[in-house]
Image 1: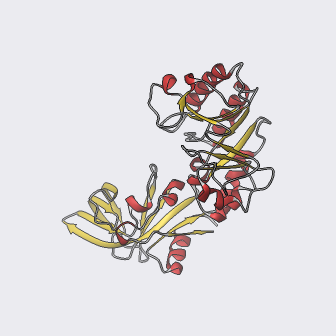
Image 2: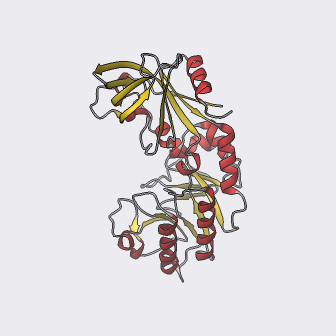
Image 3: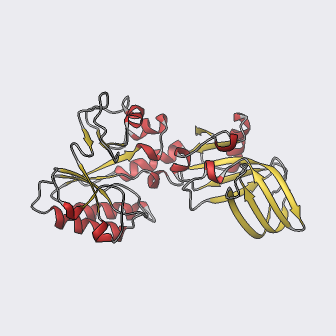
Length: 325
């Protein structure tokens, strides 16, 4: 089943909720299978639990990925029942997580069995995570923070070449390059993985495609709660909150649907979330036509998985549930 408007509306009405996250399981399976298919022998894929902390999703991930990135005991507990002896877990916490109860036979722990590094001197930035790679390697496993923004293929390859030079003749055998990808297609991602595999051919390499691999597989649907009209300008309040439900969703596809199919022309349309914050702004649109009646539906696709991860009950607005179709 795809994420078409009629199905989304039906699911929201059945849920008796004001808003709802909906993800396409078959599309997720297809993307997981594609990203892990025919990968080089020295490459493994880890899924960052923080990107989508939902037990059903993580159980599905365990069937395709080589393991997980976990930041703390709470995240580890979300995956401990779906990992086996073949899976790897890598702790990305910026502090020592080797406390009692947090143990696994294939666990890399920052500060204990691995080192986290950044590329500040190479990239000209100042990261709060890890040491600069120029400051010395003392572990056989290292975890890299490649930058503050999403990483393109070119930037990843440049970083890989730099890392190879710095790790040459060192004790390093395993390198986690993290995630934060900005690829235009699955084929570009696969090409990048092959190129990095060649550059770092002497090492075991880990990638963490969390948000990127789930992007486009989900939507959130809500309803119009209030409409203020001044001439042909409209201020519309919806049950979807930009602050509480759409965090880190940067490239959304938005539509408004009405059961009666009645549309209204507007010169300006401002869409807001239901909170009391001035910054709870979903969109500011000009010169169009849309369904603008109380009870009509707002559908937003192209979500970041982090929107679900960051969801909250701010201002008494209930965080939406999630269903898979």
